[in-house]
Amino acid sequence: MLAQGLEAWRFGCVLGVFLLVVALLGWRLVDLQVVDNDFLRKQGDVRTIRVESIDAHRGVISDRHGEPLAVSTPVQTIWANPSEADPEEARLSNLARVLDVNEAGLRNRLREYSGREFIYLRRKVQPSLARKVMALDIDGIYARQEYRRYYPAGEVTAHIVGFTNIDEYGQEGMELTYNQWLSGVPGRKRVLKDNRGRVIKDLSLIRDASPGRNLDLSIDLRLQYLAYRELKAVVNAHDANGGTLVMLDVDTGEVLAMVNQGSYNPNDRSQLAAENLRNKAITDLFEPGSTMKPITMAAALETGKYDVNSTIDTSPGYRRFGRFTIRDHRNYGVMDLTKIIAKSSNVGMSRIATDIGGDVIRDLYSRVGLGQPTGIGFPGEAVGVLPAPPKWRPVEEATLSYGYGLSVTALQLAQAYMVIANGGIRYPLSLLKLDDKPEGQRVISEKVTHEVRNMLHEVVTNGTGSRAKTGLYSVGGKTGTVHLVGKQGYEDSEYKAIFAGMAPIDNPRIVTVVAVDAPHSGEYYGGEVAAPVFARVMSDALRLLNVKPELEVGKVGAPGQVPGERG
Image (tube, rainbow, N blue to C red; front, side):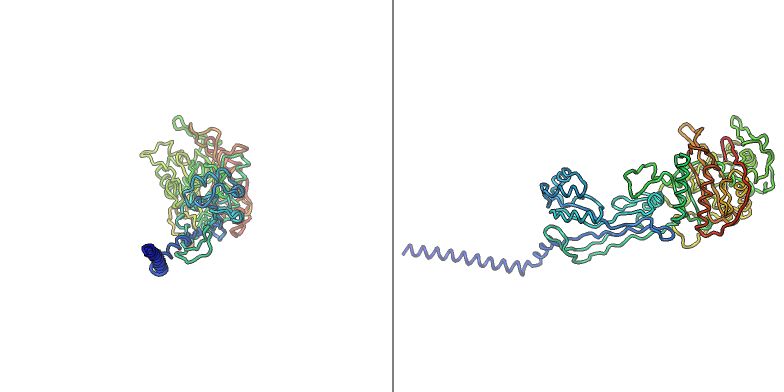
């Protein structure tokens, strides 16, 4: 009896436990399917649904005619999830070969970052390479779309456009200046992934990507190519250290071309040199030399003390200021104002400067934009130096009149000549295409600028700038050859050859400044080195701009040479 009762008790306990387990399992099923359904769904989503970023397309930079200068193209980035990847995976050797990376380094990185879920393996590669990677079907190795900045014009527009870093953030040029304008806002979306992290399908859009805005520059790519070709050719031909060319629209202040040598290719930065990054036309200062003489002459005409028929006795061809001597190439004797400019007479200019005073000259220099920002908004723009002593020494007035003792950029020099070209109106300069003509400020009378333009025409027809003739268009301009400044002061054998001018002379359309640094082969005068570049560029540029050709036949004069300041 006792044994039977014990057996029944045991059976009842087992049955009770069994029924309790069944009840608990039943309750758990109800709890999972009904009570905690939302929680479990969320847990499942956590394991399979991800929120991914949608890259935003950076805005396109174009020239004034819509030609692309900077575009973003879709590429692929290869990345890994080290927590999923096996560093001992045999196929990693194939992956290293496809990505052109060190196999041992790849395996070590996967081990080192095993606690992470994301590391880059190779950024911004061609889609074809990404397809090869994904075909290896290696756990923890993935690809995602990004964008890469591409510059169709390469080094031709590098100094203006600039470039971005690998994350498409502007580093130089207009890419840096207008980075916020060009940058888009990334979007977000929900995606369904498998257990290997691969996207199965897009589920929903959280926020669409907002692309960056486009930027239309004032640059005419046709003129930019033309200017770059000619500047590079003259720098190579004369074994020069570098050069700069700036071209402005006379009636709007828009920059039509701006090039420098040396340059760099923003699409291939493996050979990038820091000294070639600067946009020298805007950042580098130099003494403008004889190219300032027309501005000084305008100041003299404004005083009313002089007119175009006034004469100056430059005998005996030199002028002493204590230990300092100013010289002309030879004794020109009595000259009128036009001949003083045409022959680039330092003595003639210095006598005028002594008469009208340094403050009068400086005032006009300031009015045409020297010693102040151009308003172009380019990073690293130099302001220059425009002296303003409490009392001018005679030698300071003299040297100021022919462009020593002050410093300018090539862009500032072009702006000053633009004022002479358009009849005395100073416009703010712009690297952006303008829809409407800007409001300018009159700084010189139209009568004075007309008289100065005639003098500049004489420089080309019968003076130091004869090699600036274009043949089909009448032009005017001024040569300049200045000593470069070294560590110990002025270098005896290093010069900057300059030519600044405009065309057509009766109704100028464009102004161009050419500056060549330290030509070492052949001549080094502005009239011999820079003027021919001006002639070729202006002739082709005016034809491209559909300016009606003229037929000009002029006399060729011997280039002037002035020790210390050569034309």
